[in-house]
Image (cartoon, each protein chain N blue to C red):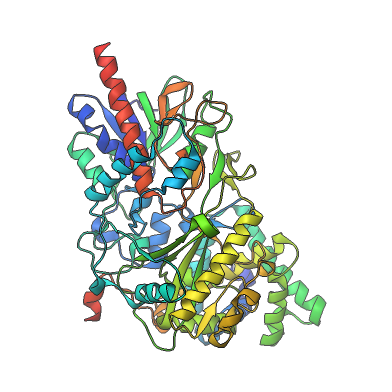
Length: 130
Length: 503
């Protein structure tokens, strides 16, 4: 399901988490696997809406800037997604929230990303810090 | 469909309510009664609590902790496993506020009775204040900042034994230190002769007091113990049925059952809508080690909110922050310097907020934010910002500000920067871990679903023993009150069986 929207999804991913631009192919695949795993148990209709939303963002980029989302500079990508995040329609806002949440999950649920921001929780608790 | 025989009592759910009832009816089991607990989720081995965010959230929580309300503007977190949500709470152990119980005005429910029962469970679960030496900076800064900002700070008693300070309470304690029903009441019940069957979902309760039950198989490579029964569908007959599957288990179960139930079933849903608030300090602080929740500021009576210390995991934190992009990343990169506060609105039951079921019998939560709730979240956001800055934070991330990052130099403008006009449903991440209501206690079927002892009006063989019973929000962390109410349900059952034995 995600393969068909991979370039768009990665472009949105880098807009949501700028550090994602440094991910290599293996890390992107790990991120996408987390997103896929989160979507898999959800209803088919919701999965279709997810894919549709990604396409809608691309169409809106063409309408507004005359270019596909993947070819926009970072500032324009950010502005477009911010407009949608503040859209008057709840449907659009919650769609962006869901897309953003899935990409944040894909990025920050990877152990390397958690370590990179300094997260160090350990089952041994205080003993691990001694 | 197999028939495992007839039981005297079937308890549905094994969390704070179900676990308490299970232990409370042990004298009946010892007297020869057949008692069964049916738990939808699995029973995990101790070593399966790894503390890894994605893995444990997927295993322990319904929908991975992201069960969405009908309009998709709030996520609800509740667990499905042996021990229910007591496996994933932080163990904060508070008794119900007197003013709340008086406001509930349930005939036959006395505050003093609830307190004495609560105290029993506080003792049984080893609830106590952690010593200062075990508190991390995240908690200490909250206490210091709150006092400096003029708030009354209280310390949570927490029900831990041998806590190593993993900070992983919400992912299931990897050291089994938290004294949930999975550690205390359920093992005691099983030792006393109560049978517990996991991975067993009750699909329906019928008027002949039989239950349609589906036992799920253990998937290849999946974790958790297999069910005590073989996978398949069962018809379980019972003399008495206790629904303790949590608000989002009990309500849908009763709604899809073929029973003459009071019309208020599913109504009166409340959930303490919450925001995770984040600030950053100039230097790293201890935040992801040590118990995460030691202090709180209760402004429920005066301003409609409660502030609690908290520290969430990377993804949960990222989700809680408003927006995305460079500013969002800046706050995430400062994780080791973060201080966090959980803000809970003490919402009130409202007509439009209720639980229904979809065509598959699954729960649908209808929740609209009242103007009062929005105002409470704004006031709480401002109070948290004051506490953060008083504790020395350099920046506060306020979801109700736009842009959300407020620098210390603007600490004097908090009221102007944090405003309700910046809030849009579906934009900010609102969460809830306290679903309540739907089977409120009350006088009769005209105004409620059960009486003060959890007896369903008109169906005395059917009881409710979980947070569904709350006629309105509790305004504090609910597990102790659930246990106290479940203790009353167990007492009522024992009395009924004793009466029947002598009749």
